[in-house]
Length: 384
Image 1 (cartoon, one colour):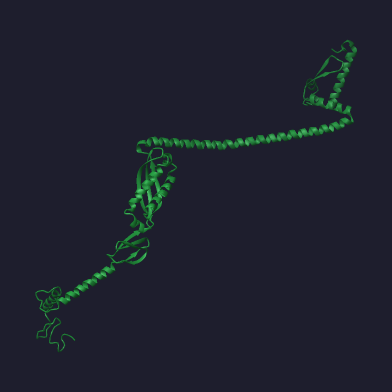
Image 2 (cartoon, rainbow, N blue to C red):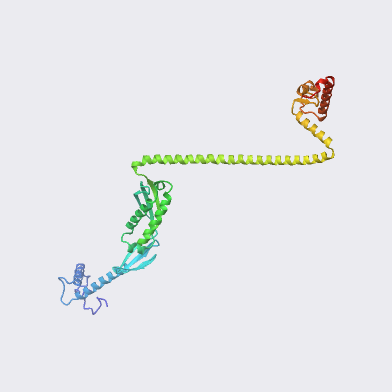
């Protein structure tokens, strides 16, 4: 019932009798009474009375504090794991599980939680001075891109995984560069050098069980020491000139060799054509001879005379001077055919050949003239 209802002995809410007047209570008195009660709950004070409820109030406060601490302890164990993260849980120092993305709760002070981003690609770079296979010194700038493949291995197996990565990268680089000549390290062999270093570095990390995955190894730069940079630049220019001259020679070769092959093929084709021509002419002469033999068998005298006239026509037609010797005469007749052709321009001075009839007529005239001279001068008729 309400504190001011009938039968309440006129007490106020704090257990004291109200004054007889009906006015409101004094505000200062209310504050003092309230502070006194609070001091009583925490062990009493000047206004504590024997037999009060201070002990019960202290126990209630302790319970309240315990509940608050318990709620805070439970609440601090809740967390959310992102998609890129993995959580490694240790319970009393012993591995318990690896948690993926999602909502988790782990009791504080009992579980130790390690969170690592397993999708972020990390970068490590270094500049190393190496000795090559041919005992030359080179400066190499190396960059390694890596990510965490196994969060448990990365956190628990190695005390400092990134320090292990650096040492393994340096070891792999020295091994590969030490097996490669300086020319390949500084020029066209850099790409293959990076591939070999990546394979060897991943093998080392797998053996160490670091849980690290190598994404990419780049040889960003490779140079000789600064003390010999000028001389090395001269070597590079000489090699560039060598390559240029090789390319020019190759271009000249590509131009000359096809032309030579074409000329050789042309000569071969001409030789084949000449061969075919000679063979065809020989076969034609053979057939002509066989036909002529058949005619000769039928009429030897006529054929012999015809052959003689054809031969004379061919020979005299190519010559401008003719010598005629007649049987029974010591004289040889010289016929200047070129002069005769000049003397008879109407008959065609440009004509080089003579017909068989003309040759026969000339031969008959010459024979008759020689016979007459022999008959008129019988002493010239004997042969030497």
